[in-house]
Length: 317
Image (cartoon, rainbow, N blue to C red; front, top):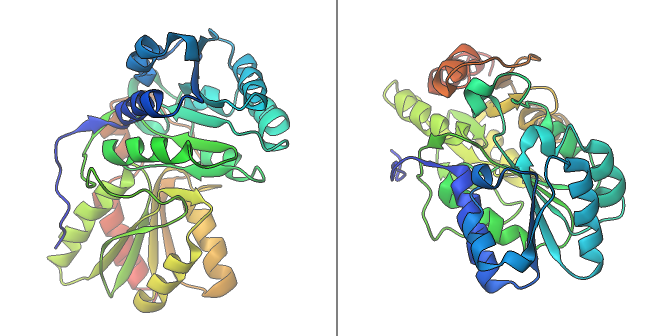
């Protein structure tokens, strides 16, 4: 049913690294800042090729945001890099006051997001970051699904003026989107056409949604799968058009259901086309230590959980 196949597992953070390497060669205004996590952010090649355009700030994330804001005044396009927890929760005041409020052209790039950070445990597994960032006026929020899309998103945000939050992960996951697929900020991607249910997913849950859709097809259920890589601005038109056809929706994300993609979808539908909806997300809880696979299973963030949610929501049509 789907034209998408796993081209080989890759980590999305490496997609960011490759995107930064390309930007280093093509855009002289792009500069990189990092909070002592060069290896984790995969930006060593950018540094080797552009040492004068790299700033190692150490474990001083708040200072990094202030420096980035200042660099924009001289026309630079700063990309900050650290773990998602330290990119948002630790420095929220600096982002709000120095970047968002004054509409600074800073790209906040956050690795190791969500529960698939794994063994590092709850203190590092931020599940609130999308909510924190989407509430800031003027902040664009992007959560790509695989290596190829993360690289494309990294390139795209360099061309967009204004603050951006780019979220990606630690583990190797299926790399399935076309290498040459155009990345349009704010534009949803229809991965499969369906008539019985709409599955709207972001990040690592997009591939899980495709697996679920194939299993559902074997049960005679036609699922439409939509990849929402841009959570803000949200492609409301694509969402409304799809649910008018299918009559029900399942949202899927590696994030707390409070403040995430599912909540944005629910607000959209409440305003324009009230529709039964089920939420695949963490249920107002912190994470814990474990492998990504163990945690996705325990917290109901995989294809089996999506499949079950579809069967449940269809009964509410």
